[in-house]
Amino acid sequence: MPTNNTNPSDDCPSTIVIHRPFGGVNGYRRISDRATRVVVHAFPMAELSRVAAAGYLNAAGAYALTDGKVAYLGETRRPSRRLSEHAADPAKNFAREVFVVGGCPGAAFEKILVVDLQFRLTRRALAAGVVTVWKQANPAEPDLSDAERATHDRIAADALRLLHDAGCRIFDPVVGAPAPIREPAPTEEAVPEEAVDAVDSEPISIGVSTVPLGSSEFELRYSDLWARGYWAAGRFVVSAGSEVRQAINGSVQPLTRSRREDLTAAGVLAPIPGVADRRRLTVAVAFPSLSIAAKVLAGAHSAGRWVPRDSSTAVLLT
Image 1 (cartoon, rainbow, N blue to C red):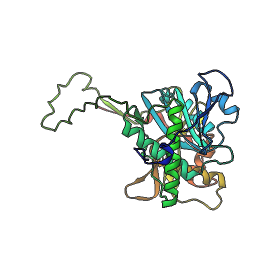
Image 2 (cartoon, one colour):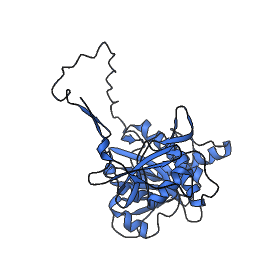
Image 3 (cartoon, rainbow, N blue to C red):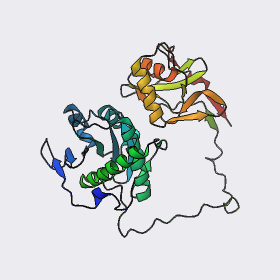
Image 4 (cartoon, one colour):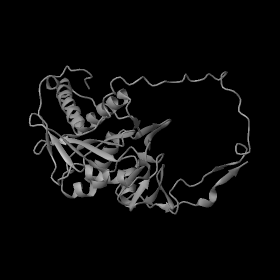
């Protein structure tokens, strides 16, 4: 993403159109420019249901969730569904404001474009240093042709301009702000030996549950694949660290194939050293049901059953 005014779209006057279909000044607004296909949807997370019900979030886009201090950058083909998952995640309570970058009516963004926008916006936010960027996995930079890259450069520049006018200030450093003070990492010799107190002497427990209080944990075994998960907010959440089978059976339905492609495009599948037929989830993923989760992880139409995990197997080490 250009960091200076080398793009012609940045060097000339521009006109921004802000539309507030619900009225008011603090709610949903759609920011556009008739000279570009980019549209930014901006609104408080509290208005997500209203905005989604109006049909404004049905096309692919990149998005930013932020409270001005922390930011999460993502991309999705279905913003209304993905943002609903974030809204139900207690770990993302910082997501007060939402900014979705998509295409104008009749010119929806392609998958490769929104993946590239996520990569570019994440890199820009990190460079600006205005917020702490929550990264569950480094967004992958897509492989683009020279023609595609030139087009994406223009679209990204327009997106930044519209995001700024939408009130998103996380992509440009504050002028005149002092550089952050970074303490040098101490060497091993420089770290003083800590005194051992009573808390340090307490035992550790292996095999304890990682699920929310009151929830039961399940596990899935299919061939050599192993995964675990739990119910939360009406969705089945597969825990980070669970495995995803590389191969896919011929009987798998197109929707399952599409969901597996979404995981690959999101860059959340990590190699497992010494294992060629499986990948490991680096983040938790919420699915509509147990069966859908099993099908996506196993790449199979019939992937077996999730069974409750036995919590009595925790081991206490003194």
